Image 1 (cartoon, rainbow, N blue to C red):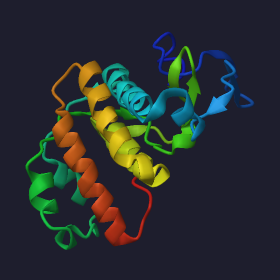
Image 2 (cartoon, rainbow, N blue to C red; image 1 turned 45 degrees about the horizontal axis):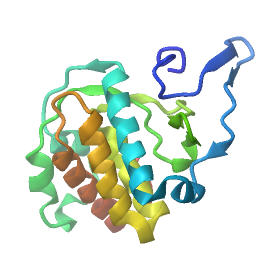
Image 3 (tube, one colour; image 1 turned 90 degrees about the vertical axis):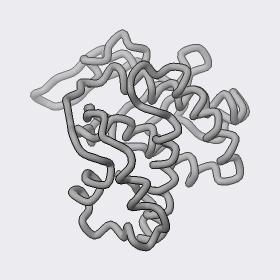
Length: 197
């Protein structure tokens, strides 16, 4: 993925790699994403940059057609998902179609984000990449923000929506993705599972 995304401004520059050893070396980015970003960019700036990254990545990642609804996909992936325990979850998921799938980063832990005052947000660690419904990284990055920054959740997520909508070119609707994210946060709370991937 680092080779595929070279020059995209989405990942650190890959400088060396070896398949036999294996190892890779990337451009050095000194900081991981943490509370210091709130000092650097504020809630609005951090959220906007997260949304922007997710939108640009969705456009750049390899994709393929996929049919059905978000409910079909969720139940196929996790048949034990307690849909009936969250009011409106089944209807909400069933009302939103899949708009294809793409090779998602698939690891929303905010520690996988690197920040740079000039470059903005870059992501590393694509070890868990897998084809998932488009918008997957956006949905679960919102979940990670909810867990990591509960006191600033609303401001960051509102700005995230704005950043995604401003940068996204395609058929995904940010209001639907936000709704999906809220449903999954509720479902994982019911399951007692803090991780969406």
